[in-house]
Amino acid sequence: MKLTIAQQNILAILKAENKAMSAYELLEKAKPYGFQAPIQIYRILKKLTDQCLIVKLNTLNMYVLNRAELTASYQLFTVCTECQKVQTLAIPQLKNCVESSIKAKRFNPKYPYLEVLGQCFSCISKHEAQQI
Image 1 (cartoon, rainbow, N blue to C red):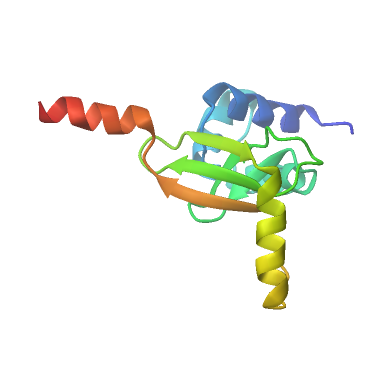
Image 2 (cartoon, helix red, strand yellow; image 1 turned 45 degrees about the vertical axis):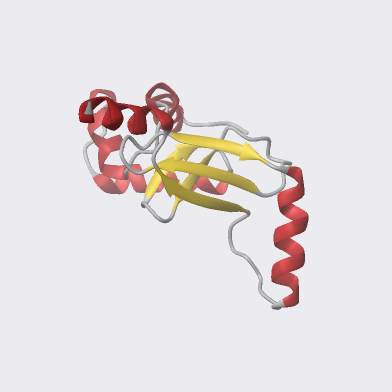
């Protein structure tokens, strides 16, 4: 698939930052590339999401680079609510577990991933060090 220069710039920002980012954070980082308006960012984010190159974390309304293989089954994203770092875990057994559970409820999932919010080890360690 062919990406525009603007799409490549947004992907490069997400890769360099290595964390979940809001559209407005991306706009600020993209201003040196000539981006001016939120609508520009939202259009690119929509296209990159449709191409499975990025994932929208709905619980935080932020975007992250999709590092998993496109053929991977359900993914698990752990999201630090403090620093917005995201880890992607591809768990093969998760697909069977989720699908068998929701199939019994006759539910059709919209997204093939789960988001788990909490604090990463670095943020927990930082808070523990401050308490000493």
